Structures are given as C-alpha cells and as structure tokens.
Image (tube, rainbow over all chains, first blue to last red; front, side, top):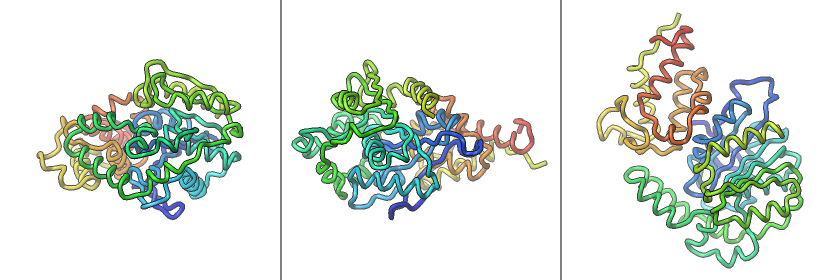
Length: 259
Length: 104
C-alpha cells in the first residue's frame, strides 16, 4: 500500500493518472475528503478516475481517516493544512494545484488557499463546511457531528443497512476516532473564518438544495470574490454520491476552463 | 513471448491479495467464486477495494488500466462489482500486455 511520511505522520496516498505522463504538463489535482466515516475512497469511486484521464490526481486519507495514521490529537483545520503542505512538498509538487474539497475537505482546501495562495490554481468545493458565527454554541455531543454533516440519524441508518463486517469495523474505528482523540474538542474550538474575501483563486462551489449547511453556500458566494455557486435541486449534504455524474461533468468542465 | 495468464490464476491471486488486505476471515464463508460480490457478499469496505486495486497493480504492472476501467463506471456499478468482473478485466489486460492479444 502506498504510504508516505509527512508532518510526522504516516499517510495512505494514491496517485492516479501520472503513469500516462505527458511531460508534466497535465493539471495537478488534489482531492480532500470529509470527516470520520469518509476517506479517499469516496473520491476514488466517483471523480478520481474520470478526472485522472485528464489530470494527475493525488488522493490521501486525512489524518485519523481510512488507512492513514490516527494520532490522539491535532485535528484542527490548521493541522490538516500543515499535512497538505508537507505532502505536496514530499511529492515534489511546487506549482499551483487544483484542490477538490468535499465537506470538511472543503474548509481544509479554503484554509490552504488562504495560507498558501501561490500553491493553489483553483478550488472546486462540494458541500464545503466551515465554522460560522454561533458555531461554538452548538458544539456539544452529537451536535458536533451534525454540524459537520454527520447527522446522527443518517449515520444510524447507514449502519443499519450495512450489517456484519463493515458495520463492526466502521463502528469500531469511528468510536475510537470520536472517543479517543481530540477530534471533537478541536472542531469545537474552530473559530468562524473571517478571511473568505481574501481567497483570490477561481472557485467553484456546489451544494444540494436540501443541504443542512446551505448558509455556507450563500456565505461563500457573498464573500469569495471569484466564487461561482451552483445549487443542485433535491440533493442533500451527500451531493457527491447522490449526483456523482453531474458533479463529475462540472469538474471536468471546470478543469477545462481553469486547468 | 511471455506465458498468458488464465482467469483461474487471476482468481487465485485476487483471493491471496484480499487475504492480505482484510485477513483470513475472507474465507469463513468458503472460497471466492466468480459470482462473489465485493460489497454484498464480502462486505468489503470501499477503502479496502482501493487497496486491492493497488495490490493488483503491483502484481500485474501499471499496464492494467484501472483508471480507464473505473472511469467508465458509475458509483452504483463499482459498488455492484463481482469478483468475476474484476478477474475478467485483469486477465484481459494482463494478456494484452504480455502478448498483444486478450486471448488467454
């Protein structure tokens, strides 16, 4: 399994498309997934392979997720930005990359673009999640999860449908993540971001019309200067899996324009 | 010219590599067959399917074009994949690479 050390941790990574090679002129795309029950496979099953026909796609499991190492602490957005910086350095990617962020991966992408504007060519955000005013007041117990799109009912429903082996493994890993690391404390401590207006790269943002975080869509559109917003009718926070063909179409068109 | 690869060999390789990914529990319900589905029968986590793909690439070489194959599929198609579909794909690709022909 491809693993690399970065920022003091072991990460599971996947590189798709670079074998095709054409002198390094292809766009470089890095995809960042969502929280706890998510990992790089949600990209692998949806956009990563089709995009890899046109670009070099780099996937990794965020710290604590999938097959990457799970440290007991260090789950702030900034920690994740440090990870991405170290991974890009390790991969030898100096030029600007296109960051694809889903849910929590969206806020990591935004924060990376804010801290390292010279290293980001564009942002393609799906249901990007970030702290807004009043966020801290609602951060308690399962609400902390709901606020990141991990609605308790949805998780329970998912677990009920996925019995046996997958259930026990996912439940065990998630329980360990939530109970034995500083993840929830770190998320609760996130402050509303006040720098969205400083994001200078082209940005495409997609949200589902039924998403519980539609307020973030409006905030991105209002504050990020070059943000194009698309609301997909009838979709929830799980937009990437509910409408993967549509999202893929938009992503390919986006890379055509900005790649 | 290198020997061609048979689907029986690929099936055996997939069984061995799956045990590397998820352990001996794989065989509790009997040996893998071409009809076994990754999701419903094996309860394979999607991240484990990614790991299996990686191991098949290591075994058969980068010429096995997973990117091109998966790029043509929708999410539901990938979730519904059977062992047999993967065996047929890998066998054909490995033989194209070895002999220039897909015939095993």
